Length: 239
Length: 188
Image 1: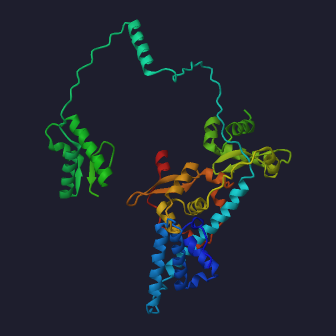
Image 2: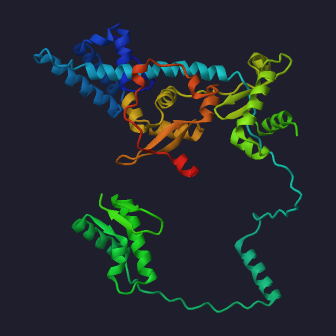
Image 3: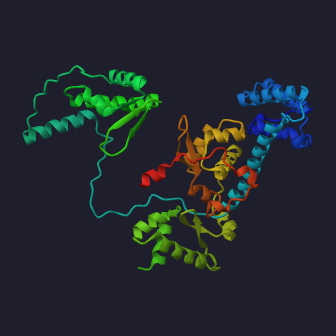
């Protein structure tokens, strides 16, 4: 048997299977599963021998074929479906699109006879004169020098850098998330307004942190957020 | 303003398929009336033996192209280039998307039995398909549809011009009633 077929030619396990079926001139509605399975496995072996990277999809199909083969060996009740049915349906659907894609190929070839222009870089010269600056010859030190000389000329005063103060976070997104999650576990749903009302006085920081927590929950944990009308209450429901 | 003259100049300057919405914005005229003028122009141009250019319609876009019968002369003028046609895998995936759109990657993979991410990405880069929204199912998978560029690539004036399929297979694998269409969202 001549198996010297490059596997790259096949678009997938269905394609390979079709090749085998066509080569043997087999009726697709009555596939001799045992025979086809043997042939298919032989192909896989060849592929492995040539050190080809056999895609998992091809191996999955081998397993499917073997499963069908074993089902065929078992005594069948009359009412039972043909174990090959699902495979045949899939094969036919794949074949349909394979055929259609060959049909489309003709359209593609045909359309290449019509030549059109690609979009060119055309621009209308603008009346406004703009000066082109070439920055590639300037380095950061030169820019800094220019900056300093400008400052001097204009007599600007560079203000002393304000001392930077780092504040401790009063609220953390994670804490708020835990808080809401706990409430959802307990009640199933949480109204954002009621969470605000729990605190006697609420700071902007708390509101922002809480909002971020709600967004995180929806993003990471798939919780659903509802709002009936603009500016209305926001309801968070567990996923 | 002579609309026909303006339209011809616009299409020449733009080169690529020019969308009816774009023209409508520029001329400040309703899309319908422009479309009927373009229809007239197509009849005039495309039937005139003395002219070398025709107007082609691809979906909602129009483009000036050369005539089919002049190809061999143009070919002698141009240098032959590498064939730009699509790979077999790309053609298969594109066919599935064209007939089953909007469709998810999983549906494509079910039909072909192989992964398709790379090729889908390639088709997106080429502008032949677009993301048409998300399916409101677990994982919120992206759904794909063909573009006007797809129509242009295959010389189709609308998606209805695709060769027809035996009907039985055209049922979508799952109903897409729960699609959140991003374009509609943008429009509102």
